[in-house]
Image (cartoon, rainbow, N blue to C red):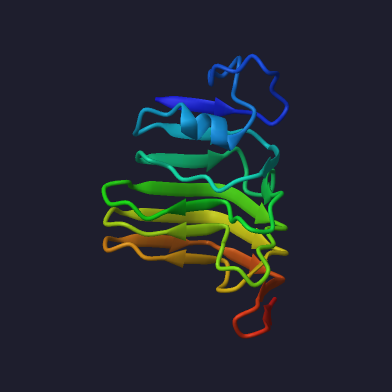
Length: 160
């Protein structure tokens, strides 16, 4: 099953290709588990952490076209620690996620299920501990990741 999302969607959201959700949060909140959330090119600003409670995949239309930001300086984007929830992220760009000295990150994932982060970018972000933290007890596949202009306040290093 696929749930569709488009930042230019209207308020009449159903998650279908012809009537997609407007935000990632809405798509996650209506998922039943195992779906692929297809994110059309556009800018997505999330105001709170997204904590999936079911396994799902997040697939962007194109890596450079799907830009995910956070409008909060006290929250990252995705955070999940529960066991039994497999997550996959592909073709996404996390940009201007600035948690400052807090430990909030664009991706903070734990649990005991597989994790995949493929063809994703982390650009102009800052947090205490870096671009992402992985605590999974299973297999984590990390491929073709771009980290650019990331500032970590834990060691005051700038990554270019």
